[in-house]
Length: 387
Image (cartoon, rainbow, N blue to C red; front, side, top):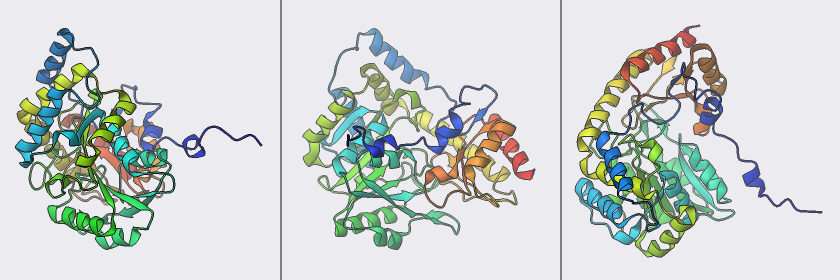
């Protein structure tokens, strides 16, 4: 019998719930989009001007697959400035988007039959990245209340198996807005050390912080330089650069050359002139970061006022990122509810089921858009809940 040449686990990949809602309506001007993780703010002028100058200066050729030397140096200076860390240059790659950085980390860690433990609710593309490696996921959900989301460390320990190669955690969290405390980070890292398990930490919202310190705590502050700790980060969320596709990965020092090879295989390197814009963002962007964070804080409070007080809604206040993840009383099918809100009221939301098990009563809403437009979207959602 002839064998199918396409891997079954690839052939069976499905769109996320976010894409299922957005795919047919993302270009409809009447829809207020709360489905994707981005603002409606155009990337700031000083960033765009730096990229345009690089393009005009002829920066259109190949550069290092690990990122231009100038951008790598800027990223290292940035970590020294905000975290007080002196990181070895060889630990860093800039393969392109943060999603590519995640994929590189998964390629380092996972083979057929391995497992990655995802701390959920989690961003759905991480599950696809694991599947593409031929590995399986296990899930442990955060404790939902009282008062805030929190890490269930005993459940994490109970879920580890001999096949577990890594634990994935995202803080500040998409979709919950949870920020992992430094104590929770240290407890999780200690557990992983005892069990011989790696950590993949997605810290792309590290500057989108409403509660506690800015930046959010990082595993880089507590992990040794050669430990199996992989930290991914990028420019999309703090600097409104979603379309630039620029992120980075900091891994163990001993993997400097393999990481460079992975970056080369994934994309041959990030767009060269875009990296000039990234340098400007890192070196000149503090004022913009603060302004954007304040806009999101105001919008977070608006969401809590309009949805948080609704009798059918249970909503824990987001500590960071720019999402709300309300639980809706009586909802058992979040995809149907998201479709209804889209078709009846022209508001795009993300169904909770796509963020892992136990979330089908939830919706995810991105609140990074212009405040009056957000208010209109929230009022339309309430109309559906009240029908």
